[in-house]
Image 1 (cartoon, rainbow, N blue to C red):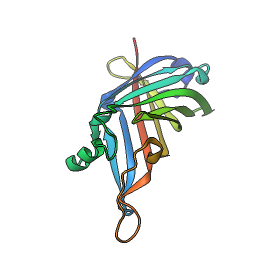
Image 2 (image 1 turned 30 degrees about the vertical axis):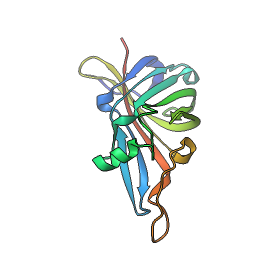
Image 3 (image 1 turned 120 degrees about the vertical axis):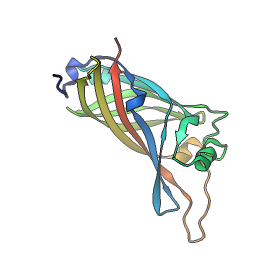
Image 4 (image 1 turned 180 degrees about the horizontal axis):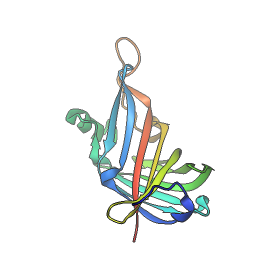
Amino acid sequence: MTTATTDLTKLSGTYNLDAAHTRIGFVARHAMVTKVRGAFNEFEGTAVLDGADPSKSSATITIKAASIDTRNADRDAHLRSNDFFSMDEFPEITFVSTSVEQVDPANYNVTGDLTIKGITKSVTVPFEFTGSVVDPWGNQRVGFEGAATVNRKDWGVNFNAALEAGGVLVSEKITLEFEISAVKAS
């Protein structure tokens, strides 16, 4: 029987994102009245965890921008266009951590360089360590969840349309969501 642990000191090592059990998503307000959720379905990433000194930990994620999925083919095509992500010219979105700060035993602030459309800005994502377990296949697995709100215009994602009743079609503020499952490299 395996049990979950939240003690990072025993978990130091390199981990690879498990794309089948990880979600990298976003939420945007649409037409000022509702939220649209989406995700990127193709990505890869690694994390180096240093349980003894979390400030020496790091993470890198590369996302295939064309894998955007909002469950609406027309909207996804529009998001891939020059109005939003210019995915033909900028096929990847990347995040490379620059620092990791332990806030308490289960919470960490991961700061890094987020690059979208060739523009790089620093972003801090608060993450909660949700635990670790040896899965049924003998893999050491860790979980983290986090979210951060950014202004999409900071990366040149500027498209919008005014609404007749006031306001705009798409919010400038976007919430980035991370539900991470990673497996320790052998």
